[in-house]
Amino acid sequence: MAKPVVLVTGGTGLFGKAIEAVISKDEKAKDETWVFLSSKDGNLVERAAVDAIFEKHKPTYVIHLAAKVGGLFHNMRKKVDFYRENTLINDNVMECCRIYGVKKLVSCLSTCIFPDKTTYPIDETMVHNGPPHPSNMGYSVAKRMIDVLNHCYKDQYDLNYTSLIPTNIYGPHDNFCIEDGHVIPGLIHKCYIAKRDGTDFVIWGSGSPLRQFIYSEDLADLTVWVLRNYDSIEPIILSVDEAAEVSIKDVAEMIAEAMEFKGKVVFDTTKADGQFKKTASNAKLRSYLPDYKFTPIREGIKKSVDWFVENFETARK
Image (cartoon, rainbow, N blue to C red; front, side, top):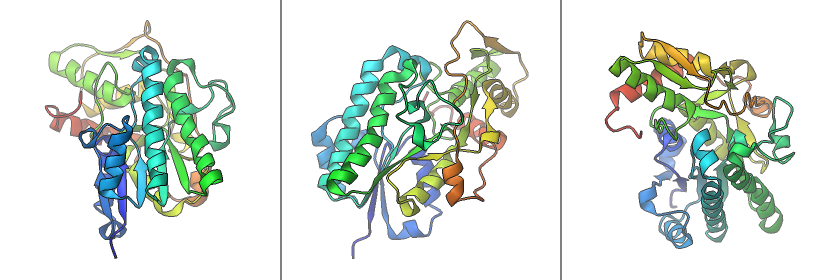
């Protein structure tokens, strides 16, 4: 009997690389064929390219990570692009999963899909309770549609498609771009330059916003668990506990410490902060995995900093 094929879209980024690391240590994965797609395998915005990928690999399961992504400032500038590209990618992948008989699809959402005006902590039942934050409206609405379609595919075709909602991911193989990247990798790159050039380490904003950060290999570990063990079509938040929430200021200081940066840390309050907090409840996850141990953020940041320093020349930035 042929081995089941697990196809991972967006398989060469931060999240995909972490899944690759996790399954290399997973006994069950030895009896599966894992395929990690990169943009070189085809442009997922184009339906013909997605058909060709599914025809070639004939996946049994799909983990859908591919998306057009960017940080706060990039999202604010290109809302139409974020909406259109993500909508096309998701529609192509989901419909090909149906046509090619994929048994289970696990798609990655984001905490930014939640309503801007909400109570905290946010949980899985609140996704559609109001419009998302205006700063990333295009991206958020496109991502919300995955959850809508998971329900539609269940109702019309009785298919088992689900989604996971990670909080802020960080780790090795991230995109460390300062202009368009996310907060931890952007700050790691900035701190590296400040140390190298003997300049101040400047953080955009006040440093006061709070976030829950999840180390990429913890998220990968939990994603493989979702694929194997989580059978609901309702989304599941994959996050550290609420008590593990930290401020951007704390993160910047941990990065400076891990980088052994001895200069001055400065907060540029002329820059926007984005949402003050997006605290997410992981109660659903904890109901399944009460004893799961997350990588402490100080340790995860140290691993990420060390990886960036060692791979500075080749890292995405």
